[in-house]
Image (cartoon, rainbow, N blue to C red; front, side, top):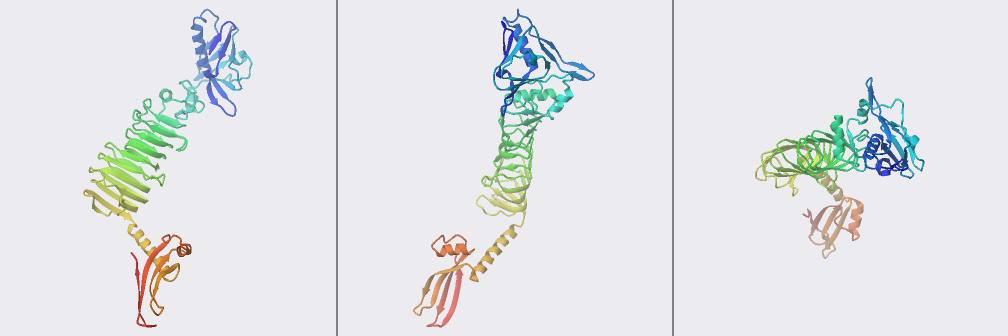
Length: 449
């Protein structure tokens, strides 16, 4: 902003304005308190100090508990010209006569004067909805109201925390992807995203995120301990202790510290990525309740305890788990990295295993019974194929191969030169002994493998 002193024109540029929206129509705000402070600076300059005053200012006045807004009046023949273009400007934060002093061009200037316009602390406080909004895609900076509200989200953490401290808030709403760095001193704050799709938060080591609650976002990075995470998608996290509730996992979670780590009602997020809990060698216990999907545990040599309740899942212990106690219950499977089942007892030299899983044996029995039912169906000439036949001098069958398939299509494919293993249930060798022509002795059928 500048002033052409000879013609008494106050020039306001687009760069001086705050973006409200860009489509379908460009709309900007002009903060009138900023505007009058800028005028005072220009009046103090060498070119302006001998000139007539540009404006008259009446500050906020409190009457009967209400704070009435400031008034700014352009005086002494000065006018205002906005940088030309097809956009609109809202005059916010004060009553003024600027709309009457505008030099007309393509810009639409919207005055918000009101006889009852007030600046009420209670109204301002309520407009924040209990916290300050950060949106890195916006251009808003500073701390004057309404910055940090839905109307004017702030683009940086420093201003957002300044507003939060002034207003007494301990909550940040994050409306874009954002990286928490040195300026993120948010001990005991609550951080709320728009959703795990719209908000991805990355936490760098320099950030202070001790005892922070994270909700409704995608999260990764380096934690500081004592955190609570709710309804989030978790990428890889380091130095994790605290409580994780109702989250989808798709990363490596490295535990650290002397406080137990809790995962409650969590599940895999991506079947192509098996989540990993790295116990950090030693230092804390792990409790995981109502987990669904696969999960890998690694790096435990201390005497810590791992308690996991599965709801239809697979717990995999890597061979870097060499000590401690692992207690698993619920419905699912406990196995090593090679797929071998692990039962109760001592495993891998020094790990105490307590395997209280339900239905592990029942699942195996069900699979056995299913496979045997399929074999019986095949042996009753349903989807069976006989080949590799041999005959004696009398034309009598003395040996052959019998293969059973799970359906007609797979059986037909094998007989027509297609893949001979798809859908194969079992393969048998059949032999028959004869004593001369038409003198049957015995028949034998043995399963291959």
